[in-house]
Amino acid sequence: MSAPGLTSEAQLRYILQWFGEFSELQKEDFLPILAAARGKNEDQLATTMAALNCQDKPVSLFQCRIKLFNEWFPTWTEEQQDRLIKGISEVDMEFGNKLQEYLTNGPPVNGDCNGFTDETNVAEVESQSVDESANDAASELIEENEQVIAQDNLPLEIAAAS
Image (tube, rainbow, N blue to C red; front, side, top):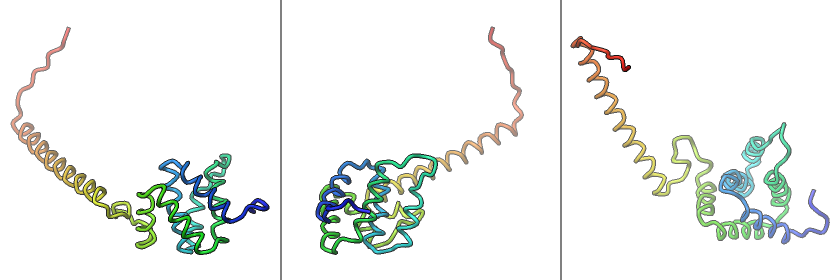
């Protein structure tokens, strides 16, 4: 239910303004919603919206804005929808890139560098892999040393501090 007399141009301006006010977490939540709406994928949109519901809590301003977005966006012309995507991409270029990646390749899959292939994420994943390998090697070395010490049955004295 949109406000009487509110044109689609005004709605577009509101969405752009609200996007500029979104936190990074809200932008992450908005990404699949916008991608689903733009891709005209109602199943994905319904699933994403169901995840945002908080039954025991009052509705947040963000949720109200998303509700209005979901009411307004389908009523806009394709040109207006394109203008929203372009405007959002101008406000936040990284979000625009993620949105294009999302629209091109679909939603991210577990273990898929969060669904994005920029070099930073790939480098972070590779770095984590190297760190995990080093930790595994260190753990194996510690276990071997503990086994050697345990096998020697060394006498041990415990001194109490007074």
